[in-house]
Image (tube, rainbow, N blue to C red; front, side):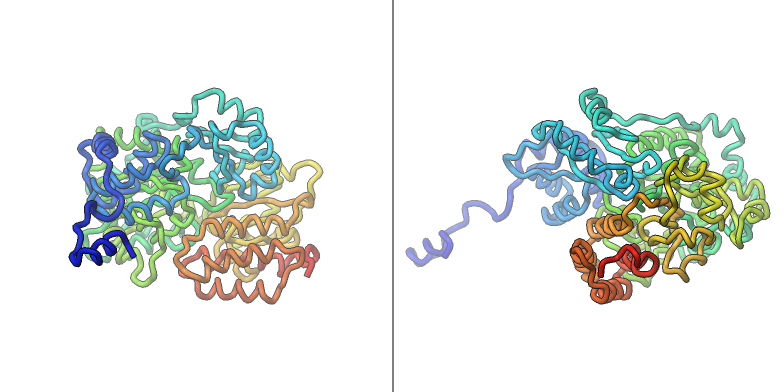
Length: 564
């Protein structure tokens, strides 16, 4: 019996409650939040942005500040807390807890694993003070060509060693990211940039003509799904207005870093493609969703988007830059839209599709960074030029993110349909000395693992599915005889376990059970196959549907490595 109930039983009357239920807002914390937000609108869709602002200022999220933010935005405390706890990059501290002032994130995805990241983590743990530095394992940071990678504050240490990371910690320059050398607005315009956009805005071109050009060129969505771009633009344009657009710059697939490469070298080629796409579908606003692992690119975009506005190059639409917060699932378009709206990144059931019901319930065009990168050059050079490239039945050019056991990893612009053998020999300087090809990931973690005997298959949409694989985002990780294929597959499944949004049972429970079964000395093939089938058949989105592909690849192609 509660104290109030006991008192009521004694006196025969109810006792007035002294305090309202729940955690009460702290006046000082509320003053902090109001000062931090200033005159910005208290819109629900800006919740994640405001959580970022708090963490930027204080280094973490305290309970007092979360309550104050909920009060200021007129949201329930549960609503704010569930969003803050969903995203891995938000650090929530308990009352009385004193968090370390610096967080060091160490990538433990596949390319970093085969580069020796476990030894690096052990060395860092032994040589740093846990009271001042928090060391955490983190998923792919999009710098696989220079593995292993460590993020110290807002700066990345590439080809990392213990000494290099400690020097970065001691240097104290990690509060601001390193800004790369890139082609700014004025350099891009001097080279003929934004002429396509100008011709569109001046009425010299018709939307239907651009749609036809991209369709004739066979430009496809290059974030992984490969849907024809012209057809997507046509579908969205046919929907009743008002319409919106989202740019998916949340490449989180292990092994993928092509979008980062283009954004940090030629951002305006992507921005022009974006503004042209918005003109075609008459999008009133664009939401550019950038993964939080790229703070340096955020600084570039903030500068260049402001320069675009000053130059009057975006009169037909508004551009909003939004940060992710460490959730691979937000690379899925409907989960990304939920995040743009300030919510947890939970994939939506379909139909309706986002082209019909996207951001704020409006028809929404979603395009990947590399897809937009190709728009200006295809229109300028013509569809025949783009389609003339290709091998083994593929059409067009592709940006392959290549990492692993090759001499020259990096982004390789190569013909669509090229084989792994051709890619390694012609673009990557061959394998590393002393390595013998054993297998490869043709499309990141979701694409499974293929054996060396299939290294002549075309790396193109529709070509690998018959072998239980996918080309996806064209993220190629090369494995050799020095790599434990079972350990590689387990690393990939652990990634999916960590990144599952938890919304549907097949994925949430399935990935956990598969990891536990794979950690046993011997594998129960029948049980693992049954769980994999349930995940593929019943998961809401592609994460759960493809999560078991690395495991199934072992059963199909690497049985000599199994102990059953």
